[in-house]
Length: 442
Image (cartoon, rainbow, N blue to C red; front, side, top):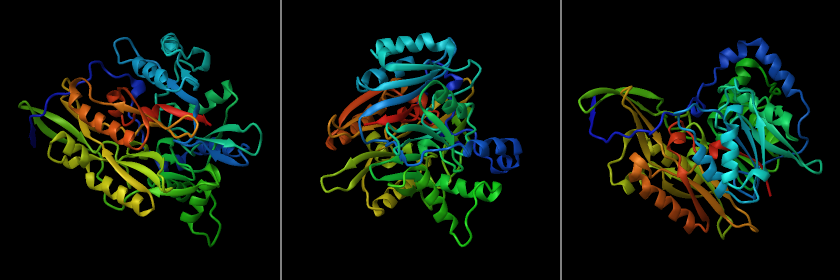
């Protein structure tokens, strides 16, 4: 049992249930295949007409024209995230439109947020039933494509074969019912946070193509033609569903990735439980690649730049020994693989830190990620990035990390907008990129 003298780090307020862990529950292929009712419902939605010529909306390229947010309820005395949303909306371009799904009990707070951010006249609030348990993570339950075969292009929220986190699978239908946006189901498995869309390519975390193959084997939801390699066929389906004009590239490692572990530690002579490796994937150091990779556009020679987080770099800046459970070697392997694939890889600091729950004698380790950012690369409106920050309160030591991430982006020619404290989100395996969805970019 390890003994630690590290300082206690606490949130000032308890977090609401709507900030639940972004990676829960995990997909259960056996239960999904055994559920005949769920299978019939999914297959019926998959048969709905979809886009004839899909073009996926980029994660970085083009002016931010229209963004989807979710603003679920919270109780009195809980962390409300009002300040985070007000700060974000106020700092985003003054021309950006918003569609926001919210519970009736907090619509008054949301309207106050929009008023403070001068965004009321460019925002549409979609009211959800109070009992519907959707979360803040608007990025994940779908990807967004435009059907460019018609003018003006129709926007589709394309949902995966299954998405079982709380009631988040209902978000697309609620938004579609209240707006011109349409929703459709795909036989593939994916989540928005594990997909990053560049100018002519799409990065997909390697875990989800593997999940799709498992779905094929367990449920038979996709018929693979005879004499056809399953891996090749699955990649073709991703291209056909997302965008036939963009190359699909998988991001992953062949190194063993440790899974979430609890162990006992001693804190001030008391026995505590410490949680490490929270949110790791199978072939990924974090279950969603938007937590460790940022798109930064092309350099003067036309090579595409990727920022890949480095826990080791963060340890150097903080002047501390390497933290073993930060699994820096796996992040390094991801960076090397992307460099070998032809990208210009730039490393930025990605610190691992922790939050304490003294009443439960619990310590949870997580990554305070700035890679999970909002990026705008646009010839007419300039290159901008919106970075979450972490050098606040009990984590004031991370201000040096915030400063270094700002410097790196500025050296790449970006105007940097530093956002407020995102620790409550990062503790639940997300940050600013996870709480929004780009619906339209120019």
